[in-house]
Image (cartoon, one colour):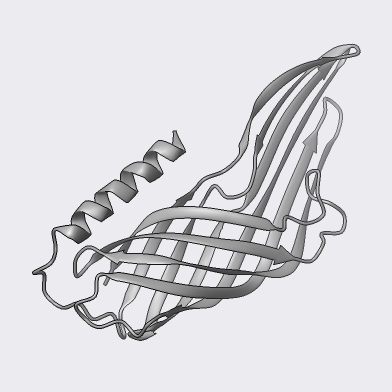
Length: 210
């Protein structure tokens, strides 16, 4: 489903860019933008029968989605502030006389920069960039049974390195694709099944520039 959405976005921006040869020049310096991104993720749901009960589990891995604010300090340099859902997990276990529910999520809140290269001219609609960001990864986990409830929140420091391409559709709209890799210190204790969520991501999204 999400692969189909991303393919549709890619098709739209390629057509739009190719048909905008005579569009007016676009300057981004001292302007702001909001982006909504959707990523390709690996996951699924499964049922397994264990001794004395049935376990139902659903996992979301890698990258699900996020929102990013950008401010262009220069035509080739923007400051970014973003937050998203990096990973999530939910499970339910039914045993004889007991029901266990578990949920966890990891949300990165990162501040960074995008550097566009080469230095884009106002009439250039395809703008590749390198990106780097640092910040906090917030992990939350809750466990519920018939008799008890437990919850905890952990924070970790980390960052993301990556790159991508912005496709400028008009004075106010753009589409983009980007890839990156997250590196973070370990949670203590673990959140979900892991202490850290190092790994790569790929996402595509749409942005509004104002």
